[in-house]
Image 1: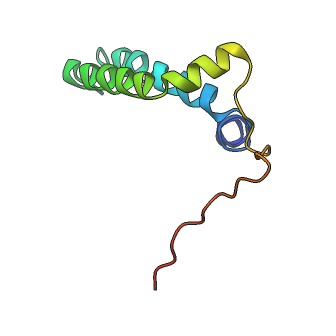
Image 2: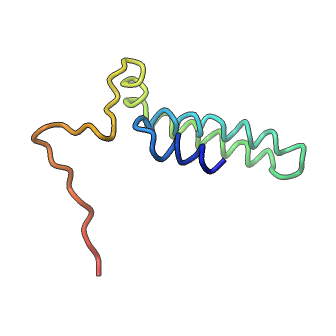
Length: 89
């Protein structure tokens, strides 16, 4: 399982799609766990709400995926520098 996660989610140049699939599966997996007493319906509602929020927040990425123009991680725009995170001591 960890090899799949590493290959598909971490090294995948199109992480948006992999992330959205994971977010879409969260409420389903949570609902499957309810009859096994490993989750509650409140947990399913939270997973569903979180899934909806992430989907809405990534609407522009979803449109780029549909259009086939989602930028790969290894591709950078020329002339645009990506700022690094500030260092803390």
